[in-house]
Length: 394
Ligand SMILES: Cc1cc2nc3c(=O)[nH]c(=O)nc-3n(C[C@H](O)[C@H](O)[C@H](O)COP(=O)(O)OP(=O)(O)OC[C@H]3O[C@@H](n4cnc5c(N)ncnc54)[C@H](O)[C@@H]3O)c2cc1C
Image (cartoon, rainbow, N blue to C red; front, side, top):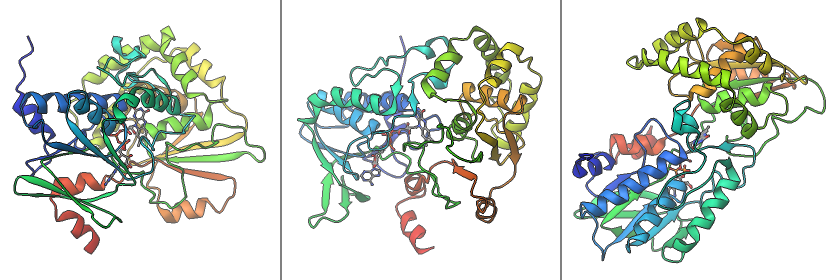
């Protein structure tokens, strides 16, 4: 039987220096929709099991994204009263309405055997791998029966969370009676929006755009800045003809050559798990990939689907290679093959605002910034309640 220490588990969710404020995934590295849902279920389960929540008490959840609604449903299913605060006007507003991004629950664990399972196995709020908006629709359906039981405050932007004595005070923006007190608060506010350092008006990863469509005019040069999964996927979108995220993922995971190659890479990469420095990791990974024997059929298959309306695709990153263990193995291999076949170019050079402005003087250049999210709340929680004040003062 699995021997787990419930106290240790609930403590792992506690926000540092707080006693009654828990966060879902804020301090974790591997963040996917499915993993956030698992965290939400586990947190609810262990708080209830450890009797850290009282049946008469009301639980406040901040954030109506997928992890927030999952936590709200989990508590509500066990008879707890829940109030959910969501700053935008709709639940799951990040992924809602987006039709080009394919979401698969297990793909970040590929090529492990279970990773290709398309349906989640949660107690409820399950979903099947689909395009973003379709996943939201599935979750809307699953959430319907809970939404009657939960107090949902849309446009409820929580401005501060302060623990006072044995309760937590939430302060909200823009409404008159704006202070609410709860014995327990769960922060499911996510990771913020993507950084916009270059001010090139890049759409968020979760917003619909037409990068994958034929350019109805001059040939374009596409520059992608950032080597996280968002950047690696957008490079594929920029260079592969008629890019359909779902079809690409499915054709890769169903290709036996690709699977064999990935299993080999997976084993080789284990040797560098202990290297945490991203610079050293990028170099070591490159060495591993350079020594791989890429099956010719596979490389040719990918090359045969190169777009003809694109002049060049250039990926900018900080390190010697665009490879990192933070990204999915599937994306790493595809990017390596694109580089190997010279279908994209990689530059380990800092993309500054000045350089971006210079490049954008050419109207045929498109710049997409994918450099992670702001994570203001992570800093806020990590460095204490005065941090936000310091941020504003500095
Ligand atoms: C570029 C990129 C690509 C990604 N690709 C994938 C992918 O392919 N597959 C995958 O599984 N995951 C992917 N992810 C991760 C995915 O976005 C997250 O796992 C998921 O959105 C986390 O859900 P969440 O509910 O925890 O947070 P969010 O979705 O961020 O939801 C948080 C909610 O809280 C609200 N909120 C925030 N602050 C407050 C406040 N103060 N008061 C009230 N409400 C507040 C926000 O408005 C938001 O609705 C990607 C992320 C990025 C950045």
